[in-house]
Image (cartoon, rainbow, N blue to C red; front, side, top):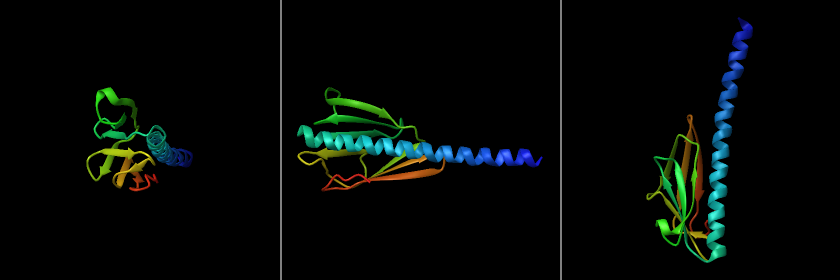
Length: 127
């Protein structure tokens, strides 16, 4: 009986760590994706948009404007939910320095855990 309890406790701890690692990986992936778009804005001398679909938990990158003709790429986030404030759920990076037009806070939620990513205006710094 003691052996079963010990194994069960270690499995629960292991699943909890997996959820945390999964969220960390998705947060890192999104942060790296945003940094890539910021760099593209600076290097290509264009405005880039990252438009989030909060229901499908995806984000799509566009150059110059959010239209099908300006589509660059779409990515799926493996999380339970995404919250972005303030609305709308779009991040804009402008040239020549890859700056953001407004501070945005993106919160990723997965299995009761959260990770916050902040994009700062004027610099476009992503933390």
